[in-house]
Amino acid sequence: MTAWLDGEFVATTALPKARRDVASPFETMGASGGELPLWEHHLARLAEAARRLGVSLQPTPRWRGVATELLLQNGHGDDVLRLCLLRAAGGDHVVFETRARGPVGRVLLVPTVVERATELPPGDLKAFPRTFYDAVRQQAQDAGADDGLVVGGDGDVLETAIANLWLRLDGTWITPPLDGRVLPGIARGLLLERARAAGVPVAEARCSLGDLHRAQALAVSNAVHGPRPAQLLDGPAAAVEIVDTELGALWRAATTG
Image (cartoon, rainbow, N blue to C red; front, side, top):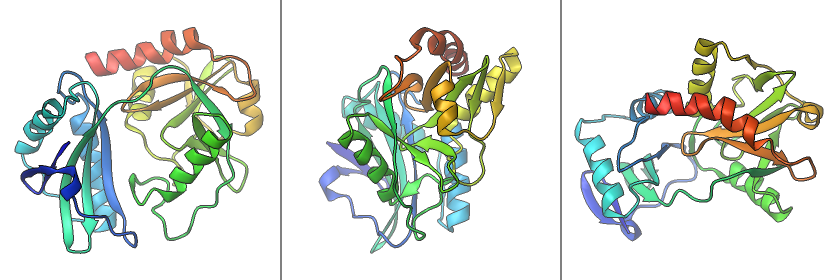
């Protein structure tokens, strides 16, 4: 497999290792036919993360073409690209990597209990190291679920290890607010924007485990998969049709014009 490192195509085995004592911001993008429809959204979020972390970001017009070339070269034209400002022992690097998209369909969720180390990046930054979220997902998978729910110390349900969370309560789609503990997801932002423009009831509000159990539908969203129906491991079956006809329709409108 090939990656792109500081202007050159290299084997992925040649990539430097990230430092664990500093944060390396990154973006994970879904591709279609080698194209990255949400490229500008991802670059804007990466720029904000780099600013907060004091990392230099100097994108060039060539980057987007390189991303397409790498996706196609690796046979991942409809899969995933990761752009990382990698902070390694020898200095900072720009790295592009690709991977398969992974399974689609409904997502099984389970609440997790994992303590976030204070030295890790905050929840509103997409950055390595990801040890907290890795532990959340591993704990969920050990329990037989696909992804884990991050639960705050105050009992608020915040997000999952890899996605934002949505609950349909009394006809309104609710997603936890951006209070510094939740990633401002690209898909989350687009869905809120499209819903408000279309008059679809949405709200940003605190959520509890009780809310999850009484919700008419659950969904998770990220920029790779868009919105996907979800269900609790011990809960009723996912409301696939509701998620697809409501959130799914908004996502298709946002990503296909």
